[in-house]
Image (tube, rainbow, N blue to C red; front, side, top):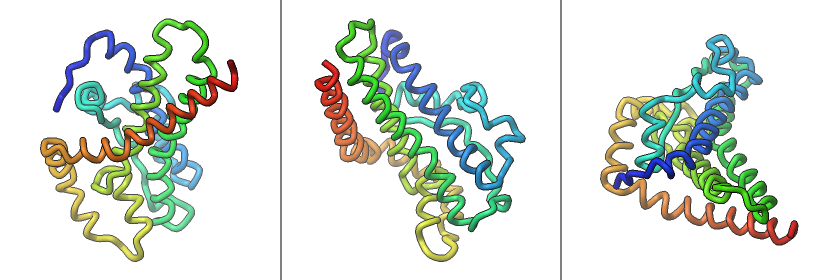
Length: 210
C-alpha cells in the first residue's frame, strides 16, 4: 500500500507537492475573500507562502501514500455576501479546480519545452501533472472534511444535516477507504485516464512546437 520513494524521487516530487498544496489552499481563501469573508486574510492565510499552508502529516502522506492535504483555510460562511450554500460550494470547488488548472498548465509547459534537454525536467513535470490530478480528485470525494462534501451540500436541495453529522466520522471513513484499497480503485478509475489525457495534450503541443 505504502511505497517508500527514494530521496531522488522525493526531490523530484517536492515542487509539485508544495505548489499543489499551497495553491489549493490559497484558492479557497481567495474565493472566500472575493465573496466577502476576510477570515483567511486576517489570519495570514491569503498567501502563496507554503509555510502558511503545509500540514506535516498531509505533506508526508503525499510522498508515501499518494494523497495528502494541507492545513484547511478557515472560512466563515456567515460573512459571505452571496447565498451561503452557493458561496461555500464555490469556495470548496476552488481548491480542486486550481489543482486541475495547475495540471493542465504543467502539461502545456511540458509539451512546449519537451524538446529541450533540461536535467530532470521530464520527471518534475510528470509529477506536477500527476500529483495535481491526484489532489483534485481526492478532494472531490464527498466525505467530510474533503471539499467534495461541501460541493455535494451545495448541489443538493435543502440543508444536508447528515453531512454535518458525518463530519466527525470522516477521517475514520477515509482511513478505512485507504486500508481496504477503495481509494486505490477510485484513483485507478479516475486519475489514470485524466493523467493520460494530459499526457496526450503535452505530446500534441510538443509536435506543434517542434
